[in-house]
Structure formats: C-alpha cells, structure tokens
Image (cartoon, rainbow, N blue to C red):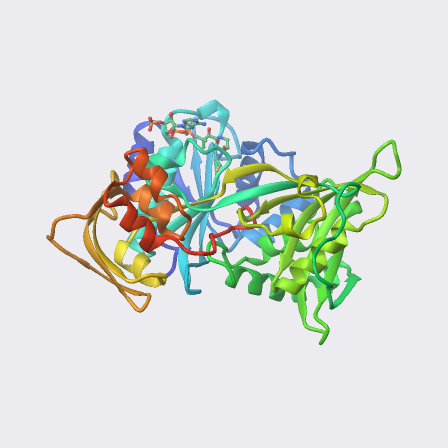
Length: 426
Ligand SMILES: CC(C)(COP(=O)(O)OP(=O)(O)OC[C@H]1O[C@@H](n2cnc3c(N)ncnc32)[C@H](O)[C@@H]1OP(=O)(O)O)[C@@H](O)C(=O)NCCC(=O)NCCS
C-alpha cells in the first residue's frame, strides 16, 4: 500500500476547484514547498513562527507522512490555506493486535479562508483515500470536540489530567525495587523508543509512535519553550531491563520550597516502572505540585497516596476519536471478553462503512459477515467507533438515541475490563 503516492481524492479536488482553490499533495523533498506547509500548520494552531532549525527538524521528521495542502493561487502567499497530513499507524486493539490505522493530523484552515468547506474537503478526501487503500479505520486526536462527529468519528478513549499536592500526600504504595537514574535525552533516545514501543503495544487505544512522536515524549524538540529545563529520569528493573522513564520540567515559585513539576511524559511498560516513577515524582524535595496530563481513566494514583484528596483529577476529556471504515476487518481484529451473536445495522452518511452485519463471537474471536437478518442493534458509524476499543459508552449513547435496539447486549459484548487509553497527542 503506498499511501504517499496515492493520487489526491478527485471529489475533494473538484469541490475545492469550484471555489477557486487547488488541492494537491506537497512534495516533501522540496524544502521551500514543505517549509510553507509547515509554517501554515504552526500558524493554524496559533504557534510561533518556526525558526530555521525548527523547520529543518520538522522536515526531517514529517517527510514520511502523506502531506496535503490547499492553495489559493489568487493570493501571493507561499503558504497553503489548508493543511492535513496522514500516515498508517499501528493502533493497539483489545487482544493486543496492532491494526494499521489511518492517522490524521495537522488539520488547519487559514482564518482568512474559514467556513468555505476546506476542512470538509480535506477530511472527506482523507477518508475516501484510506478506504480506497483498504485501511480499516481512521483515527485522530482533536482540539475541538464538536467538529469530527459529522465525518463518522466517535470519541473512543478518554484522558485524565492530575494535580498532586505533594506537600499533602505521602507515598502509600508498596516498596519499589529497580533503579532510577538521570539520563540525557540524546543518549537515551534509542532505549526510550524501545520502552515506548512496549508501552504502546501493551494497551488498547495506544498507537505505535513514529520517531517524531517518540522524540517529543523523550526529550525536547527544537524550539520547545522549556528545552533548557528538561529533565529525564529512567527506570530500569532490578535485572537492568529498561522499563520506563519520566520527562519533565520544574518551574519556580517565589517560595523556593514550592516548585511545580510539569510532567511531559510518564512511560511505564510495567507496573513496577509505574509505581517507581510515581513515587519518584511524589517524593521530590522543594516541590509542592506535580501536574500530569493524558493519563488513563483508571490511573491507579489514588491508591498509591496517603490522602486521596491530595491527588485530584483536574480534567477528564475525550481523547482518541475512531472512524470505522471497514466493519468486518475492524471488528475481527479485536478480541472480546464474552461470547455472543448480534446483528448490527451500521449507518454512514459518507457511505463508506454502511451495512448490516452478523457479529458472532466464539472463544473471544469474532466472525463478521454481511446478513439480511433483522438487526438487533442499529447505530451510526460514529457510535461504533466509540465502543470499538472497549470503553463503556454504550449505555449513554443508547440513552441519547445514538444506539438503538439491544443496547445492553452491545455494551456487554464490546466493553473490556481495562478501559482503553491513548497517552499522547498526534
Ligand atoms: C477547525 C477548522 C479546521 C475548520 O475548517 P473550515 O474549513 O472552516 O471548516 P468547513 O468550512 O469545512 O466546515 C465543515 C463543517 O464543520 C463545521 N465547523 C468547522 N469548524 C467548526 C468549529 N470550530 N466549531 C463548530 N463547527 C465547526 C462547519 O460549520 C461545517 O458544518 P456543516 O457540516 O454543518 O456545514 C479550522 O477552523 C481551523 O483550522 N481551526 C484551527 C485549528 C484546529 O482547530 N484544527 C483542528 C485540529 S484537530
């Protein structure tokens, strides 16, 4: 499958052409063209003007993605007015299989060209291209939650943010064996990528990381505002196996005893690494607050501290959104914790995944085939995306009318004991 060279979607190209706009793949080997696209991407997310070293680093890392731009040839700009990029990322699904999924990122539209259907053309184009290439699902993380439902995406994992008052809590977990030590990001990068791969393979909802995404978690990218303050602590098991790390910055306060630690990423491939790294953070001297983002909804922290009110969830938010493109392939890739049989009637405004399917689960494995039997459950493809990774969302969607029929049976079949998690943005 060559997603880099697959031609641009003709429907989106002609929709935009009717409005005087040109949709095209960007030649990432041409630095001038690629820099213009990267600048537009930074601007779209209200970022800084990227310096030369930042552009160079981004070109090195992002050149392997399918990179699409929308250009308004009537204006004398080097930058496109719309951007998107995509690649096929391994998404871990229940049971541990890693399913090649169409990951979409950098969706931006210049404020000068908003609400003229550019995002619609970009998203429709991405989904039709992925579908044509036989990719069973598309995934993205979103800055606004109201946009992507219209294209059949449903929120499938949720993320928590934590604020720990470390003057209030003491470690209440078990002993933590293993070894902690500081590391320099540059020297740890290869080891860190291996640790991250184990983390991402070990939990439904996580995606295998390209070097760019891994680099962001291990150590600072060029131009990141806190680069000089970055710290990296690695955890190795008693037998010397690298199993985790935490990257963070410490920020000052007028009171020198009350610094704040902002965790960039906490990677734990084992329970021992998780507890050792949490303990490290909670025990830091001259620190009053530890802030952590994008943890799972089942983060075990409350059990590990002496006073659970000292470790508060400050945010709970939708995180990974899933769009099923091929119902049989997606549903057969995951496993199930109960056996059963259901006829699902899936509706899809874009017409990519619609149909009626019998899902039969035996010994945890599914067989899915088209059927004319009466439906047990009727649902839009966005709701199927929401329940796909095992999060317990069926009841709420049923109450909202976004799953109809035997909602209980669907919930029992799809949910998993451990909720899915995605612990990074892309
Ligand atoms: C979000 C963004 C990409 C939308 O681009 P756009 O070209 O203006 O969107 P379109 O004109 O194609 O709109 C498509 C539909 O989405 C809706 N929509 C777009 N942005 C929306 C928003 N921020 N809130 C609510 N609805 C929105 C439009 O109203 C339209 O609805 P319709 O289907 O009912 O007609 C653009 O505003 C942007 O670049 N924002 C900043 C970066 C960002 O947030 N990117 C998303 C990253 S995940």
